[in-house]
Length: 190
Image 1 (cartoon, rainbow, N blue to C red):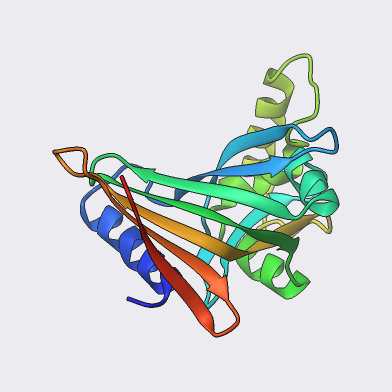
Image 2 (spheres, one colour):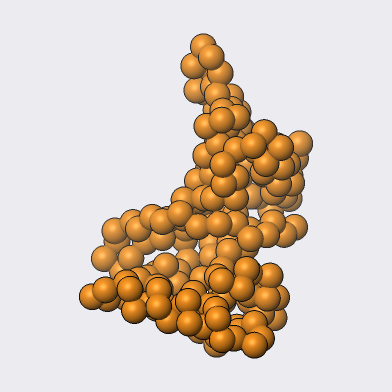
């Protein structure tokens, strides 16, 4: 296969079909202004023709780090199927229309959580947030609208490495690197 994005999408489907837990979960690594990497697990929302799409509150450390340094790394790992995919690329906040669309697809409880919690900010006690979330879930008459500081993040891969586990530890590794004419493919030693 000559298109790594299509192959990644196929592997995601394989992981879902095999019953892998949280197949869309991916480690998302950014770099802070101090040069230190920062990782967290996020959920892939969509695979586009040449990009991977995620969502985030735009006040978070992740969003701030992307703004100052758009170079990111992603790692999908599906141990139940013996596969992983490592992606490096450039991230940027996507158009507002995509954020609105993806927010509307979220479970109502997740939309309310976005309104209740300023993800990553210091708090003294989680119980007031839980109480506010429960209250809003009981009184809301319509789904909440997408906040202006919530968005979609699009990652355009520059390199994608596919790794398949082998019992003899001679793992298959296939690296795709973006080139002017498309993608250059290199088989790597295990």
